[in-house]
Image (tube, rainbow, N blue to C red; front, top):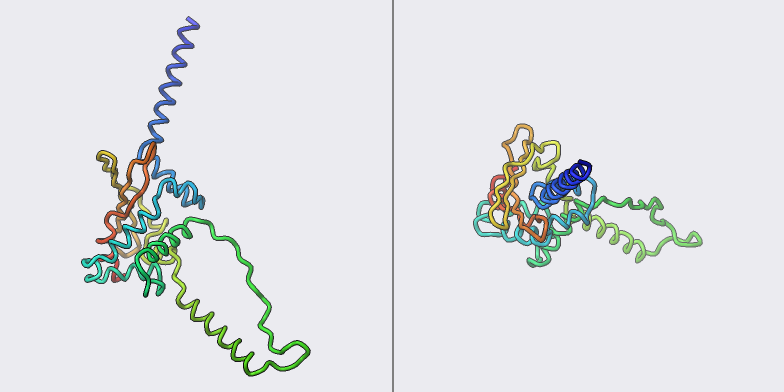
Length: 226
């Protein structure tokens, strides 16, 4: 009798363990871990479930396609990257977009803000020469230009579009075929049409990884005027 009970307990434990292991190999589990990594600013886990270079590469291809550019949707890429997109080639654009995604996930580190004003006089009380004054003025101008060209944060752009956690309304049904899975993220901004961001996941070893935003071309066209 005791042996039978022990065997029953072992079987139940094995079944439970096997069920949990299977759950960790599903797209649903991968999406849950991905969502948690963004909330907790965990880049290591995020990169396990998102192939950032692949997502960025596909995004650039989609946003710079003739169809999207003719509709004005390519402007979405400039809103992600700012004026930094002008005059650079695709590898640099992909890297810029990858950096924007990574910065969005990683928790920003606190930076010290200088409080010491620029010196008005030279050491010893002597006035600055005209050359030194011109250098200071030019330095301030260059700094302001750099700030103006600085790309906006990905968070700011997504907030402007209405793709935020406050507007998130859940996942659509998972469609899995072979080694690919498509799932939609639904957002409902106030006084705007519902936005569905469709992700394409691919099976990688024992988990699933986001490889691209599969409807980005259509999204870009629909969001071009926002």
